[in-house]
Length: 629
Image (cartoon, rainbow, N blue to C red; front, top):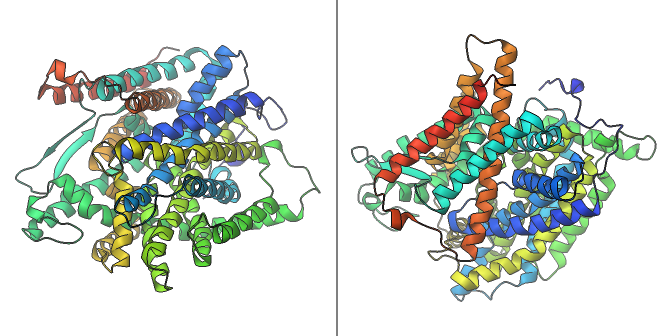
């Protein structure tokens, strides 16, 4: 696609050098990577989702570097958030797959996985994720600037710029931050009102309407805009108001695999978790393949540019803002890692497995990087990609004779590596987008990302062991929903039991959607995720739609209002992210601040949820329409 990137000027010009990769930024970034990694591991194991850590890390770095240490380099702040956000992505990739090994150990099928194995899976996945993202930077970040919104990356840049420029911009950002943090504390901390409300429709069995009334979802919807938000909403509508009621209507009292109970006894949430997730996974995988096919000419052009750069290395200097880790270094590192996966006894993976990691790793790194450019890291369905990987990997391992516990553990480890690759590639692309806007040095950011991966991979095994020892995976406290599904998938394929009809249904839906000219990936993500989440995002998209069509104002004033909304919603995303980390820490320390039992609001709490969310959206509209300079 064409864009006006040639006219783009970063905040810090390429010919200006300011402090960036410093001891201070690296040390603070490492601490944040470990903290966010542990917090997100707990959240993901408990609720099946993780928070994006880029903006919280940026806000914290501003507080430490600018306020406490009295340093004023925006690129130093940016490097802190780059390193710190890696922890969240490593955790997301690990928790969606590796707890399956603990579940098998609990059943006596295999021995407990070693901390070394868990750490190495996270480490090689994270490093490969960065390696695969580097040659894609020119194509996705630079050439498609103005085409792919990269909501978190753009929001993170706005947060850092607001802190740099001060004045009204900082006030808008931090007012959003404070409101969202207080909102999150009251709803998910004190539990005065629920953050998700829903109602099963009795006369239309199998359907359920609901919304997650969270500031970050409204923020992501506003930043993504009405088009992407509506595609996600449409996908959710298809799943929850067409497919699930049809399953309920035709299923009756039948017990259909992979379910183990009569369909007539299943609530809508059970129908979604038992059947529709497979359809969504098929759609997401197909959307990824279509995305890769459409991106292929761009990828080929990017690699041609990279190879030319290899030949001319050392002959001509490049601009600071165009420097990446050299291609020879990337290729050597990739080969060394692939051989290590094959030969090291810590990886229960053969040569075929090592090849699968490299091939699928690059594929999903490409898909993930482009997808987060569309819908943001918070909604990146990494587990959906892992599902597709584990299905194909297990089939290939079984076909080549690698069966039993060896094939099962190999499939999970390969899936774990791919999952981390996809998560890190998405996070890295958001961080590089932030750096592109600010004028950071890409090579320093890429090295920083690898440092964050190493730090968080070093502790993730201990975190998983600690949580399993405290509550046991698969229990009420930490059900580990994705890993439980991965375990079932691998067992199902090895035992020749898999709901292929559901997966192929998703494939067919994705193809039809593509033929109709709708962007497949956000639509497929909407099918895969709960409808309530898409509804929350749609609410923010609707506000953006109204703000872009305001009448009786000049084009300049309308644009300024929309930009103020981006600043405010950046603060909303940051505020909820920071408070989410705080609440995760309280939960891990077993400190209960729930006051719902004392208040005993009953059915009124849902009404309070709606009122609170409407007031939040009204505050966003007020910021957009404010005429105060």
